[in-house]
Image (cartoon, rainbow, N blue to C red):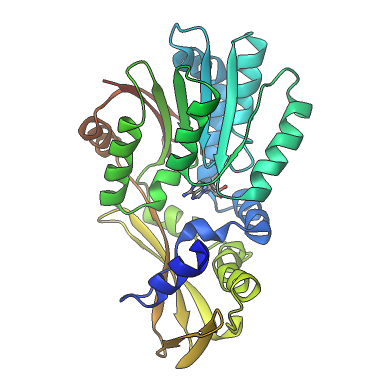
Length: 313
Ligand SMILES: C[S@@+](CC[C@H](N)C(=O)[O-])C[C@H]1O[C@@H](n2cnc3c(N)ncnc32)[C@H](O)[C@@H]1O
């Protein structure tokens, strides 16, 4: 059984029902995410972009950290629009580095390998299509140089807090003494701002969530009727967790794969995605418990987003 089908069935047979947000990103999902990023309400991209555009030299210097050659590994690179500022700076500074973008989306990796060398002359790029840690391990078969890992876009926020702590620990265990991590984390702010970002007025976020049902219809022979589900976002300012659900609008039975049926009650939620918000001290704490030393904080001008540099202790 393919992994997508297996994880979908596990998630929809669980209580409460859930789906993995990593499966949002098929070709249509990649496009919808670009539209979300460009929407008026979705601030995280603009904030992190501001850091990468305005503090590029400082970022490059911090990541180089006095060393000569290294591999710049980007986990969940997406379209790499933010990191491309850094890549340009490193190439201009004549730094000896390879760029290893990792992404679960085949489409994303193909596009990066095709477009980036044209846009940034002299860039040495090798893409890795697959899951974060499996691919990080694979990069070692290509080169055993010092690793600088980028994990941008608050991807770490797409994990519940306990999982993010575990992730940070596993990341530390996959790295060595002189390696560095630059992690982008969305910070706690006025709840109105957060809620609007995950409920944009043009409905891109809604479509992005519903697209996973369309993907299952296409790839897993499922028969979801999209009109029978509604996108429902929520934000809890007490614990910083922003969650999105799809609500079943009626009692219904949906086929998935050749022989499996899932029953939904009226108003039953499917938990789709978490976008966890942190305070700066919470991120420092996460770094320390994982065995990193938080050494630098880069903020945007509103102090809404943090790019934190974690050194391996
Ligand atoms: C929210 S986008 C962020 C993209 C980019 N880092 C940015 O900041 O604009 C998340 C990206 O991570 C990838 N991704 C999500 N889960 C992944 C996983 N488990 N392994 C590898 N890539 C993953 C997705 O395909 C997508 O391109």
